[in-house]
Length: 606
Image (cartoon, rainbow, N blue to C red; front, side, top):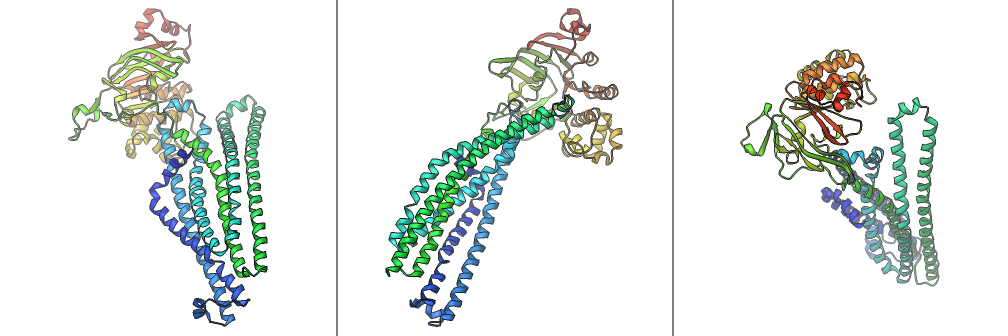
């Protein structure tokens, strides 16, 4: 766990200079804090009492004029408090800024990591849990810096300096004060492990609550149509009760911990008050000196108290830090090779003086699957022995029973996954040898469920081509038969869509997705049955656009409708994760296999 803490603090290294300045302010602040009790002690001994004023003070504070001394010491007390308060506020403000910048870096890294991790990772994770880790567990890093590192440094420096000064004032009372330290350390060590365990369990339970909320919102139409509200509420209530129980257990151990700390502090304070008063009565100590000692004693226990708080704080922060690092340390299934080749479309080929022709792959759109296999889990093979080839401009439809791996096969081309065996090649090059960003720029994807970002229609269409002009965007919308309905919207192309904004039909959303693909103008097109969820009128508009979009491109699609399948160059039939048949519509009809049964209506496509 120490390695996790050291690793967590690396997110704050870019602010090293600022942190050094914060530490300087901290030391000045501690020194001022040590001076604060002295004016009161001088008032008690030299103004209210008969002890002579130190010579170095009398020379500038009015000598034997007790009224003058009282005014000077009072103003000095005020000045020390104001200066120490101002420096303390400045120090804390700078420390908070450093903590927030570190938090930003952590969140940026987590988000970037989630973007890089393959669909295989995301399919095996709960989105609500990932959201909780990215949004809430990341606060543990800020807590670790501010309440961990900064508090520990401040409390330790204060403790050491105060012990030195107290030692000079009274050895016996200092030893009594220090006798409580082993008790505090023992409490931190004993209760720290318990609080860490309970804190991790509580955060996991809270994460489960977040996941349930997210799942429930996503499935709300199903829940309401099947009148499952009461059942879901009961399930959620049970989860919140479990979260409450685990959080209560965490706080219970914390309260016992604070009780033990308070008892240790109380024991030390009582002993010092008794012994100090005895020494005053015996003439071995002045009242002013006792007041200084008692003030330092409070200040001594304050850093000890802070250090004891650090124990509880770190116990909770460790759990959050560990959960964040579980994401950052997740294995990247899809990685870019160190010397990956650049990729460019032959349509937009640009000569570069910096790169040789062999260093850049010029894409025409030839696709070849060579004995490809894929497993989500080691013991279960989804695809096996898949081999086929598409020439530039050819189109292929993948059909087969539900769950046979059709979408998985198509998702290998943009490297949403990597095959566990064999290779997928683009114009002769293994996809794993190519720059991932360049590869995906050559591929346009239209999914069955259209996805819109929470922004304007124009920005949604331009998603795959940043910097596109408004004329280009509108041309793409016209090609996708979307321009007419867009212009009827309140703000036209500037209308906000997505969650919480303008609501569009599934057909309208799909036409925006097609417009996005038109604008990207990539040589390869992937279609995951983009018409299956549409009504007849919307389908007619989308199909018309699809026919134009497919022209001149290499197309690989998952298809469920014979009207779509008949238009392709090649039909690929998957059964049990294997390539069962392949050929044109006429060739497969002549074989009398699975496709013949589909075409005759004996088998329906899922």
